[in-house]
Every structure is written in C-alpha cells, then in structure tokens.
Length: 392
Image (cartoon, rainbow, N blue to C red):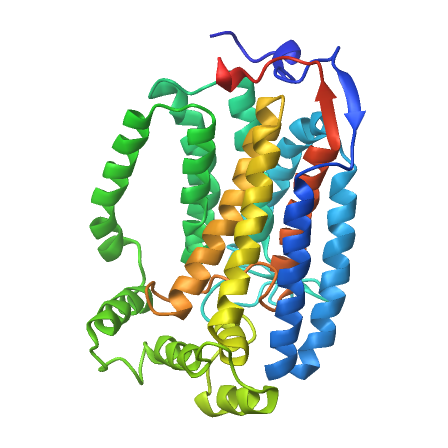
C-alpha cells in the first residue's frame, strides 16, 4: 500500500475527468424530506411553545442558507478543508471543557458543558463534530482504499475515539453514541471485512458493563435502570428519574391513530408537564397532535432522506462521495432512531434531538449543512474519472 503524498490526496477523483453539474440528483429526495421534517417541527413547537416557533423559523432560514452555501464547494475542496474543520472542532470541544473558560461563553446546562454562547444563538460543537468526523473519515478511507486488515482500522478508530472521548467528557453521551453506527456504516461501505467489524463489535459489547460502572455518571446509570424497570412495567421510577420517559409514553398514547384537535393536544401536553417537550421530546408532541399517522410520517420522511443519501452514494464515481453520502444518511437515521426510541420507551433518555424537528439552532443548522453537502455531492459530478476504488 503506497504512502499518502500530494499526488494521492485526490485519488478516486480523476483530474482528467470531465466535470458535470446536474440538478438531476437523488439528493432532492433528502432535501424534500428535510423540508417536510422542518415543517413538522415548527408546527409541533408552535403547539407547545408559540413564542419559540418564530425563532425556530429563523433558525430554519439560517440552516437553509448554510445548506445552500454547503452546496458550493466541490468534493475536491471538501477533501482538503475537512482537516482544517476537524482541527477547529477539536479546539472547540476542548474549549468547552476548560474549567477557566469564561462563564459568559460556557455555562453548564443540566450538568453538561456542551454549548458556547454566541449571543443570538448557542453553538454546540458536537454538532459540527458530526460533519467533521464524516468528512475526515471518508477522506482518509478514500485515500487508503478498503480497510482489509486490522491494522488499516487503527486510524479510523482513532478518528472516532478522539471526538467521542471529548464529547463524553462534557458529558453528552447521547451525541457520542451516534458516532458508532456512523463509523460502522462507513466502514461497511468502504469494504471492511465483516469478520474484523464483528470482532470490534464483540469487544465493544464486552466493554459495556465496564463502561456502566466506570464511565457513566450516577444519573446516567439511573436512566438505564429506569428504562429497564419501565420495560418490565415497574413504576417505581415514574416520579423520579423515569418521570420524563413515562410522561412521554403517555403523551404518545393519547394521540391514538389520528391524533387530537389542536386545542385538546395543547391541553394534554400542558397537563402532562413533559420536560423538554419542544426539544428532546418533540416526537411525543407530534404523536399527541397527529397520532400514529404523524409518527409514521416522521419516519417515512427520515427513511426517504436516508434512501436519497444511499442513492447518491450508489451513483457516485468516487469513494469520497460514496462514503460521505453514506455517513450523512447513517448519522441522521441513527439520531432519529435514538430520539424516537427514547420517546416511546425502548431506549434510555440520552438528550438526543430529533433531526430537523426538535427546537434548537445548532442541531437544525448542522442538519441542513449536511443536507447541503449531500446535495453538493450529487450536483458536482466527475464523469469519466477513476473507478470507485472500493469496488476493486
């Protein structure tokens, strides 16, 4: 395997290939899905927090603008710029952990140092870390080709462990967990051996009990205990650490199949006193208002988003484009699974937002930037370049 020199930096995207710009890209499916999810989010937020709906609309406009700007750079530029973005993101992740960071910039929320106050909005570096991680991992693998040995997995695992370790220290376990499925999806798409991946998964599974007692904080352990009790029908945590989970499930149940009239749904949300109903638990509000149909629509749109990303990957002529598209689809799909799972009571509460739907500038803007990157990959095509190296 050759070294990584200047000549190999863009391997997989031929310099002699004919550049072709086309609006006929499968990424439109993801854009349509993102618009639909964003509209559902503003509708749900307006139901429970009308004063925040207009603010979410502003965040949406900023996010769409960020997505449009993200379309402009060609894959060649992204392959170079991703390392600079990675350095900036790692610097921000370290900054929020510094005990002497100005309180005016870094103020703990619910015990987590995960946000930087910038006046008009709060920046969450972990959201940018998702983008940097996908781009850098995809770039590295597109240079080195398929990781067919254990040794070739070392750098990808390091690219995973560094940001995840910093995010866990905040602590923001929910965001950190999303990097795992994304790493797995990208490695599978790059042609990693299933035996090696299975070995890594077995080791990770064996470390779970160790992490429970050594890494997780008492309240995080309590959340896991609460979800286990909840699944068993044990109500002893209902008014304690399991309060949010129980209230969310009840609110979802009140929606039935077709939901409730707006004023009734608003009253139900208020009477249930569900914490973070506009943010982490917004899926419960959607189900209360629109019932099973509304919840299914959220999942239909996210599935459409993921399908669009996979089709962009399948039609790509170079490895970098393929892996970035897979990574974007995987991380947002995994985030949706975790958020809805904790809302309906099959996963512990982790504070993960619902992409495009939950209130918050950082999450919404980051999701739209990823959508812009995805669209840009479909828009900027290289026709007649090298064969995708992962198919060799």
